[in-house]
Length: 343
Image (tube, rainbow, N blue to C red; front, side, top):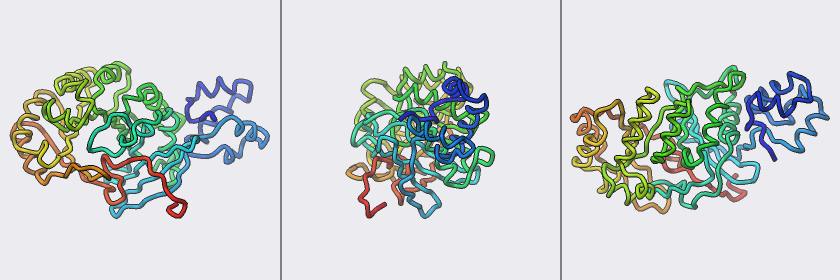
């Protein structure tokens, strides 16, 4: 089945060029409001039946919501081919944020992340990435005119830049003026450092906030926890980050999960500061979240590590962990097959 949310207004107008002129706009509005084809009631029943034979609206169905003690909600979602993904909805004083997946699984194989334990099954389409936002926005009582989601982070399952074409199309769809219309100023994209694609993104005209999952101050440590380090060095990543800033004017963020006995010592903080200081950037320190079958332990040295960075002139914050009690925190998302009595 084809997904209507994959198309922008111009594409929908071309697809339905033989119909009434305003039909494409109606369909786009229904999709961005999270409606199913059956709920597009201003369309004739005959046309809806014809539409259903070939298309689904977003291709996303919420199977279950897991509610955390801090107000975070994790959603288990089924795709139109019955594959499963997870998305996380978080409330903050500056607005509500959704963390979306870009792939079913992941092939990066980072040791601290649950998403890649089964490898990569497939990429999501642009409409499937967008559909997570549209579906949860509606679930929370929102519409395109009264959004319940103000910020989007591409930090769920998958490496966004490993699904580059779909992500670029998604960025355009998300900013659709007659749709949900979320500005790229409110979008963050996290990458483990596919440097070639970072340059492509910088030159693409799309400028979300870019965050690099660095997690180590040198290649030796990084290769132990992140297989992608065998292809791109930490200097390659910093060079790409500087290019992104120079091209877009957007400050980049380096994510750094503190792992006990691996990357959390004072000398690691000093090495990290020496690596990245000298251009506008920020370090987001993360207290490692435990994952199933993972043997890495969280560090207790976050405050000391932060102080060491700041003494070297590097700004840093310690990320507030949300949703860890429902396995919805950073690194914990995965494909979760549930028994019927769990749904």
